[in-house]
Length: 439
Image (cartoon, rainbow, N blue to C red; front, top):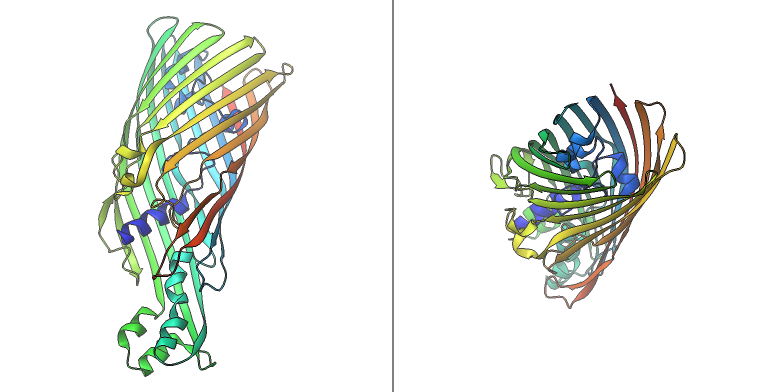
């Protein structure tokens, strides 16, 4: 079970989405970043959020390209009494988080294509490792002292860097059964890739006040097993796999001012395979396969226009995390994740549209799920931005969001030590730009 949790945690740490379920990115356009609510979209990003609603586009070919610049800091304070420093920081920097949408609309039929990182999408850098990696080595002074050799300190170098991206290629067919009712059917191909590079080196202790390599000390004492445990370790591994997601959608527009949407994405069965170059930890056996499903999602949206220039958007997304197979972590989830979003948009002039939005992401997880290498935090996100209608066919979108996380605190235990406090927190900033063109 410990190895399973480590594997899951490493994958979770790589995720750099601004808003998401446990394994799903929901921030799939600059329009979303400036509104935080897109489930009832009738614009081109409906390729992802509301495929059936694409029949409301004007006839012709529509093209849209978006990118997001995401920064996220994962902060951990671990009160294990033997650690040199209780503070740990994981930096996630994502300069390239693209989305491409293309739609051809003619009469009652719309055919669309979408591309984007549906999970992952970034590189995480933990320059000083994580508490779970360091805690076993922090006990070395106690172990050596109990052998009869007074020892008061340890030192080591831990580094871990990972890259993860689950690219989605989506194709939809949408058809208007009547002026007010449309259906959509589609599918998404997921290509998943995780890459890991890490090392634990230069493990030192100070028996009798003199710094020496821990490996040399234990070998000189005749403890070969202890020496092997403190030898330098390296990891260089890659995981790949593909999955398939069927998608059904419905859009009901009883009037020009009101639209209602429903979408269901089926569970994506995803099996990843380890391709390992070096693995001194035993976490990534070469050729091993494991399930890493993307959970099914049920989403609903409401769009209401108070006037031709003032529009509101309400979104609800429900992630069936407990039903997805992921190395057993689904058993550590109390309730499925949900998101609730509200957005407002106002046409200041023919050229400028202003917008703002709010999103609540709610997790309900067991304390066993929440550890330094695998944790999720309930959050409140606020976003805003503008749309510039440069011509009748060309528009530019700019958006930014900030995520306020609910700090998670718990008591933990290791190596028979009394309970000690552990705190998890994060900060996330996302800036997005998008361009839309109608031929």
